Length: 148
Image 1: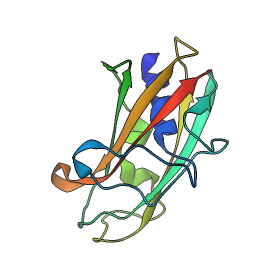
Image 2: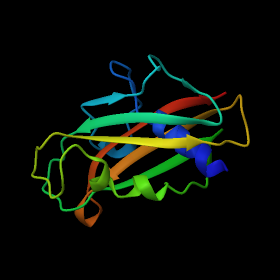
Image 3: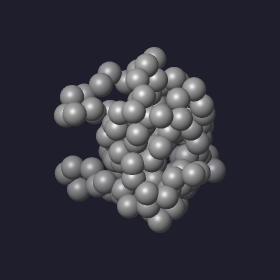
Image 4: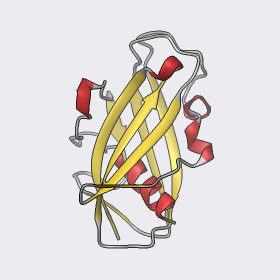
């Protein structure tokens, strides 16, 4: 169940258009745009037992045949176990074009994840990372999400 909470947080880590996101450590590349319907400022509010929709536009700086979506969630500095839903893990299945991608090619990844959290009223920090061939980071961002 916490996996879905993290999925929701992960998805909410995607930032609404115009919304400032939290930059990942080690100067990993940031997205061109993140959209989360209904969220205009952090933390995003996510209702439990609902679907979370998001999109992220980015341009990898390297050519790649693959895209892998990974998410890390933390609550009060403690990392929470999270397994990305299978339908989101392979990013090539969720982009507005197809893999392979060329360096600098702008793509939009969209996704939907169920929100099924065992807790409500907590704010979680989610880090959302998409990697390409050889684990090279194509894009990374983080955001805070409050589960309702």
